Amino acid sequence: MRALELDCDNLIIGGGLAGLIAALRLRGSIILLSGGLGATAVSSGVFHPAGTDADAEDWFLSTMDGAYVRGKCVTVSGVTRSGLVPASTACEGSPALAAINEERPGFRRIEFMNGRSHQEIARILDHDDGAVEALADALSPIKADCVLVPPVLGIERAEDVRERISRSLAMEVREYVTAPSVLGLRLIHALKKKAAAIERLQMLDIVKAERIVDGHVEGVMGTKGKRNIRVRAVNLFIATGGPMTGFMVNGDRMFEPLTGATVTRDFEADLNENFFSDHPLMYKGIEPELYVHGFNSVRSIGAVSCGWGLYRALLSGYHAGDGLE
Image (cartoon, rainbow, N blue to C red):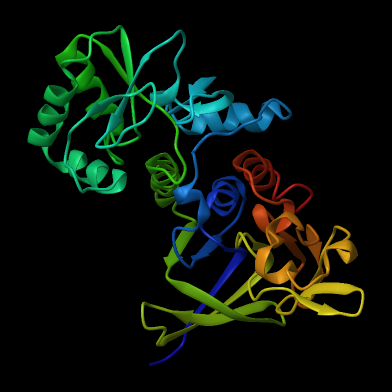
């Protein structure tokens, strides 16, 4: 099979939060290579703490068309968090708490689709109106102004499901925050839908980048990895979450072999026999600006650059193209 050969102004490796936001923001033609859903899809979906970059926050809230707000949410442990939160989780006061098919102190247990995961329930509610009515019936014994349920209220039509159940019960139904969570999957789905509407952007799923040389990226695509792909680009953005091929240590230097990127934080004190098995390497972060031959600019964004956290991924994706022509 012939290799797929493509050209673009901006090539992004990684289809998580930072990569998708960069794709929505960059100018010129864009190709985004995604190896899968990644960590964002199983995140809490909450940007906390927030408040350091009003421009990025305002852009994100506008882009999400009301699906996110500045507000407070309640976590599964009962802790209140503030920041940019899914609108379905924003709440004030002291709502009732409901757990589905499990015992939790302070939560009212309801029985609904026993044996199903939260993600399975959400996907069923996306397509089955009867299941939506059944969840409303299961919640009906709860008497309160507002009840928080786990994040199960659909993925593609979550707001519609939430409003229908709220109307049926004459009670505000919202969600509390868990991780891993449907909320992260909902966030990725919404951003991909936005990206799919941009004509100058091409998204390719199930792609593994294997070589970065002379201004192009080579790899394979497809579930069996049988189709070769070669993409030449002016600018390269690495948004892979973790380092693409792991870290290697050479003396007092730690680096990522594929790009040659070095770690930006001191690590000597961590070098012991437990380091590679237990230490969260993602917190180390590689250099935000890299030198790889053949590109005008090579930058790392998201967790691979600045560590875990949706807010930092938002900021790095939003500013990915700063300073580029």
